[in-house]
Image (cartoon, rainbow, N blue to C red; front, side, top):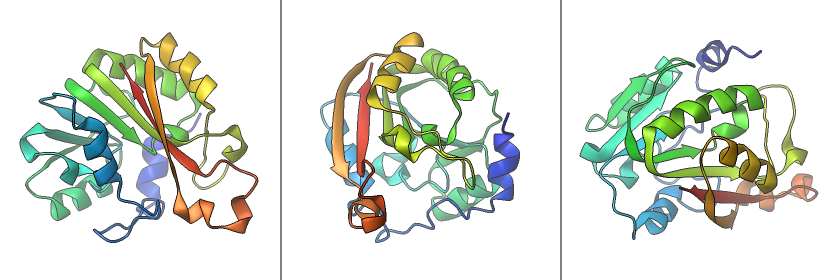
Length: 198
């Protein structure tokens, strides 16, 4: 079993996009997409699961946002960049703060199925309204290495999420420019899906 805390701490932020307002490997700004997806949903609190350095926090008002991550170095960087927002370090087996909306943006693909199942059990308790999973789908992306990736198909997510009490109500797809424009990935799905669950 992977020691995720140790792995991401030792990674020294190398596999987290360095990030600034103009650097989006997607070819579009995920903040704009999330604002559009959430514009008709009333919520008071948001939990950004695996927030990294806080790249998505500006989607939300500071008083509605909680960012959590295993990596203390990422949390420290987030606090430095966005001091008006709240970020906290968690452990793999932490209980999570309750929130109306939980977002996991390009996080679940780095978790093996057993670990993800354990996390979904706790997220189900914490999530009051919607879970939003942002992922590039497709088992053809799975590989060991640095970092390990465990991409899933939409059917995998339907079955897995339903097992833990979530139900997919929508999926929105956008081409992920970094991959879509590369000839090296022409045999893979290069769309990033936003999977909206209740």
